[in-house]
Image (tube, rainbow, N blue to C red):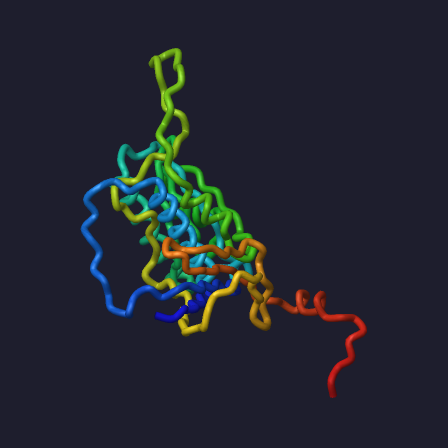
Length: 265
């Protein structure tokens, strides 16, 4: 089989995967999940989850649109995950109703519900004022910040999809022991986040290429190469390459243009 190039466009971000196509195009059924994943597989799953959420954020949200990062906490925390998710469902229904009544665009969101000390929600959503979100939530403290368009939202994704760790015990005068603020592990095979059904998917195209080289990749016209590109070999010794680029804006184009360059007529 030939080498393949997969390009994924999400907003201003372009990701390029170049790899050896080991399969012949037929779908190969997966075995049933019967055991715990290895540390290597867990790390790979975390990287894939971060990459997917980066693509979703870039495709659907931006600072220019006034989209926001919201954290919802509880004055009286729920005891379990099911209750926390029901409370989040109530919040989304109220928010959708508010947006309809005020002739605003339909609610779009990505949500991570987690227990780190207590249950809370991290949400990326199209923007509303802090006082409105606080009133719609009505269960506790709310923090809101405008999204920072730092090209790829990688830092935000790492914060949201950070690996779990077991809580360590430390001395407590009253109860003898208490948990630290470790993130509670997900249930086995549980999904890492939830999102609204109206989110757009990134654009993916594939094509056959002759080979993968060890030389530094070059950004396509209109893009700038980001420094964290990777070249390596798979388990069979075939080269693979992964790199990211961001779309140039007007200021970027002016910066790289030579000041004394003559324009063609």
